[in-house]
Structures are given as C-alpha cells and as structure tokens.
Amino acid sequence: MPKLILQIDNRVLKTCVVGQRASIGRLPDNAVVVDNPAVSGHHAAVFRDGDHFVIEDLASTNGTFVNGKRVSRQQLQGGDAVRVGKGTHSIVFDEQGGDGEAAEAAPPEIAAAPGETVYVDADKHKALLAWIRSAQAPA
Image 1 (cartoon, rainbow, N blue to C red):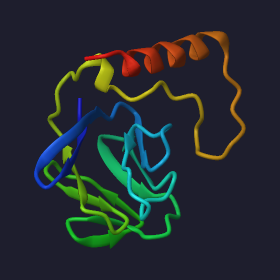
Image 2 (cartoon, rainbow, N blue to C red):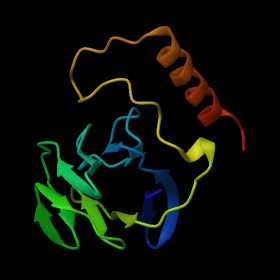
Image 3 (cartoon, helix red, strand yellow):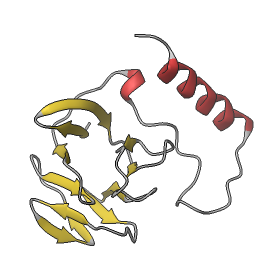
Image 4 (cartoon, rainbow, N blue to C red):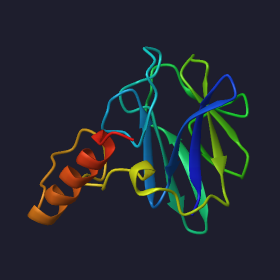
C-alpha cells in the first residue's frame, strides 16, 4: 500500500499509509500533520483515482508543490517530493509502500470533505477513539 513519508532535513518524522485518502495540514485531524504556520489547517489531500494516486490542493493559502512546481491537482509518481506551504518539511510519495504499523495508519475517515457536517455512527466513533488511544500510547 502506498505511503507518505514526512521529512525535515532528510530526517523521517512520520510515515502514513495512504489507503483511499490521506489529508495533509496543520490541524490534528489530518493523517499527515505539518506543524508550520504557513500550512493551512486542511491544506491538501492524496487519494486514489482509479489505478493512480492524486494530490489535490484544498484551496490552501500558500500552495502545494510537487517536485518544485505549484499544482492544484496532479497524479503522483513514486518518489515525488511534495511541499506544502512555505515550510522546510517535505512529503515523499512512496508508491510501493508497505503494510505500515497500526499506529502510523491514518485515522478512520468519518467525513468526505473538510468542513462538512459529520454524522458518526457508533462503530466509526469507537474506531476513532481506539485510533486516538493508540496514537497517544507511549512507545
């Protein structure tokens, strides 16, 4: 399964399995959280589009860049370097990926798009709480 690798100064900070969709942004409800004021709360999203994965800018303030080129929506290739905002963080798209650790997986999706009304059924609520507990558990 493909994954996103968040790096700063060539040091890996986090690895996230993409699944069907992975959001990128400054707020803690994103799969990839980039702690930088130049990054929008919900900055971009990577998602499956047929047989490929695509990154889409979510109307961010400072833009999304793939291999140094500003994009609004672009198909990703293995090894592509994504930069969000004006920060020094980079996100590498690993097309081959791996199975990933459970704690590194994205939180369960409960909404189709940021900002929409969320209705959470009991099973999704339990899954989200379990994911939060596992992410907070000491290593």
